[in-house]
Length: 318
Image 1: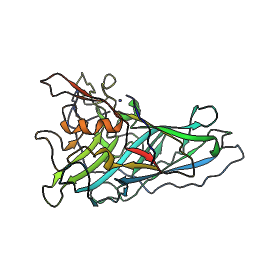
Image 2: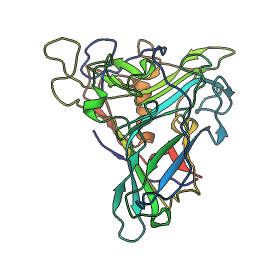
Image 3: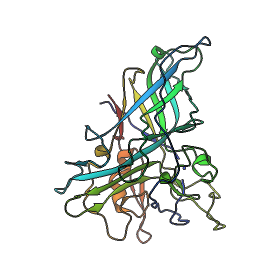
Image 4: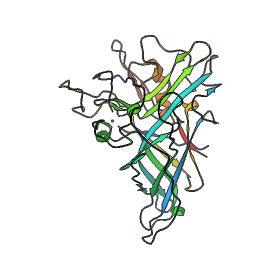
């Protein structure tokens, strides 16, 4: 598998209320989606080529299956980890031209289920605990007019959602940004990544989740709606993969790699279960840097500490 350094960008919402620097949690899905979209690569009379960009989920290179307990997750003796949910949003998919090095945006297919405008939801859970039975493990799109598959040798995209769509009213937002299981609240926005798991499921039964979203989303009027300014921490990492070839490679999202420095069977008392993006959440200092994001730890008492981003290991390809 190949990896590339991710660059952090910036902006999200929270159901636990209007918090300035804390993330929070929500659970089940009640909204809707359907089956995986499919299309075959073809060239139309207007020289527009349709493409599929496949994704797969793994845990330390082992194929992910919802509800499975994986061994060897994290850095502690109690390293068994059952994973019951795995989904994430991406947006702004671009391909790198092998000749001029420029990034060209692709046009996503508007399927009314998994893709809307330039955003897509990748869904690897099958409703084993929460969520829906339907999976979506690909992005379907069209190349820029006049371009061919062989013109490109890299791909970039952003994990998460743009600020406006992230904070859109969930009651009227279209699929896939209306999925209730990916919501926090109108002010804080959506969960960009949702991993729900249980550490040491046969013993300590420690809930340990990864919920990435924007933090520091201000609501001066206390109306519980859209923030009145950009969130302090967008938490939207950009992923760029060099030497990625369309129709040859699959993008891999590996949960085990972002948990390699974590004890999945322990959670700091009086904090959210696992890492839910809160800036006072101790567990996040081991996870954010591996997503290619700086993490600003602020317990509200001591001076803030920055845990700098490292090479992102979450996304690669095979």
